[in-house]
Amino acid sequence: YTSAMKVELTIHASKLKNVAGLGKGTSDPYAVVTHLASTSDQKPHVIGKTEVIKNSLSPNWVKSFVLDYELGTPTKVAIQIYDEIRKGENKSMGSATFDIGEVLGARGSTKAKKLKNGGTIFAHVSKSKGSGLLRLKMKGIKLKNTEGFMRKSDPFYEVCRRLDSAGGLTWDNVFRSNVVKDNLDPSWNDATIELSTLCDGDLSKPIQIVVYDYEGSGKHVLMGQFETTVNDLVSASTGGTENMDKAITLKRKGKETGKIIVLKAEVAGVLEQVTQQMASAKITPAPSAPVYTAKITAPVAPVTAFVPSAGQPTFVDYISGGCNLNVCVAIDFTGSNGDPRDPNTLHYINHAGGMNDYEKAISAIVNILSKYDSDQKFPVYGFGAKYGGVVRHCFQCGPTAEAYGVQGVLEAYRGVFRSGLIMSGPTVFTEVIQTAAARATSAQEAARQKGQQAYTILLILTDGAVSDVQATAQVLDQVSNAPLSVVIVGVGNADFGAMRFLDDSSLPGKRDIAQFVEFNKHSRSSVALTSETLREIPNQLVSYFTSNGIQPQAAVHRDDSEIAIELEEEEIDLSLAFEDDEEIVVSGGGSDYRDVF
Image (cartoon, rainbow, N blue to C red; front, side, top):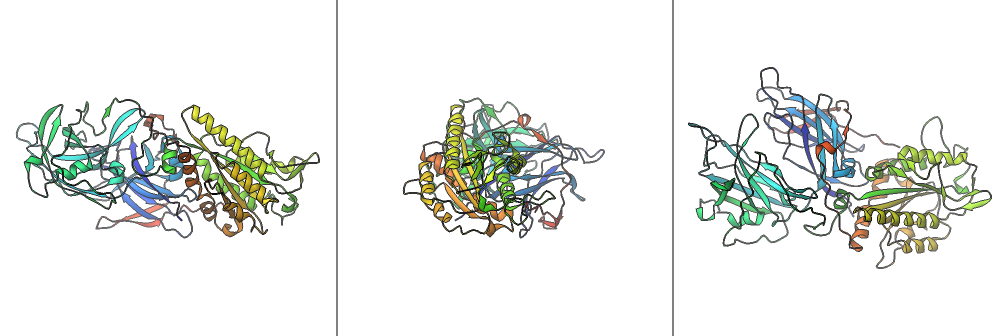
């Protein structure tokens, strides 16, 4: 069983500091992305680098990076920006680290950080869809010259993916070819493009190819463009010959500006059968661009419905569409935990520093889930204690109905011991489960009325088995149709054998919403605990929404001006070595391992 998800990281920057030097023009930035070590047994490694953007202090890199992401496992990357120096050592332009979960959970799945050297870097995470590669080789024929007398254009092309959002239709470039100097019949190098990046694995999804005349200033001149699909490119492939019958017309402002021959277009690594050679390619000239840029916006009707490109929607689809995760915490205050004043008991609060196992579990798990909770407000419940001589199986912890942030949850927990409670029994979960389920249903209904979505996770921390396993299983069955997951963490050395029954107690045809994890089996590593504790939640969330016929919302897109920029951070402790064969390796640092345990 694996809960890893494929996600795609794209980056761009704005207003970088020019480090080219006096009289040497504008910097030529590129970025290197490194996966940092987040556990003691991991080693940092370079994922890859972007292309170089000439003469630009606000580069929008085309290259994207596919990562494995798991809800309970921290995934952090370092992004280091360099100015390419052809004859000499590349100059640093700034660096920042991003937590992939935090980026995914942010509105629009985008975060921005101010660089110490000046400028801002933006990171965006989206679902990596589909599989396979497009291998493409193209040639231009009699392209219209955009240079003056006695000079010829320097053509290159960009391949753009279509993004449908509530704001309209946008084309985003995902690949940039090499530049062919002084040539109106350019034969470009072979290209290999990830289908997940290009068209979400949908071979019939429109894509756009735009040809530019390269300018050293970075203000490239549009030569022409056309709209097509991967299937149509395959159909137009000539097998390496200059067959003009299959040539594609390049247009600018509605006028022909040359022809493009697809010498090769092959799809590899996909399960679907590619459409065989058709009689002719169905190619529609794209609307002319008002400005010479690869990002073209055309007004279309707002898109609100989600149309899955292939297969079932995923956790990333729902989070990218703005689904909010709400977290509730329930803590066991039964007498079996022992006297909290005794250092050898489970609830002992060490005021000199250090955390007990309840605090460790809260810190690790709520810290992960808080990345997906927009308001950072968490209700904290207690059960199993007496107030006024009456055993309470669901009572508020802390002075307010909701605690703010992870630290607020910890303070609400610690404050209970100053409230006059008497630790008692029995161990009963049913009331906190019912309370959380009612809250989850109410939150989703309120979100639905606003055109949004919400899902709730209840974290129960207990030192022993429930007094009535069958009654607990029955309640879990009753609330299995609520937008809720229940995670139970067993703290201490009790026999938790009966609790494992709850993990597998769902009836046929009902959602499995419960997961039990024994803290002591993962007490040496917070990552081991959170990975095991949260691994079923993505599938449980998807199963709730899909079983109720609720598709993800369209992915939220935000302009740079709408994104809050986080304060600058210190330079990363990470050294890279640039090898002669252009390989980049980590030569020092790169560990981001800070276990909360």
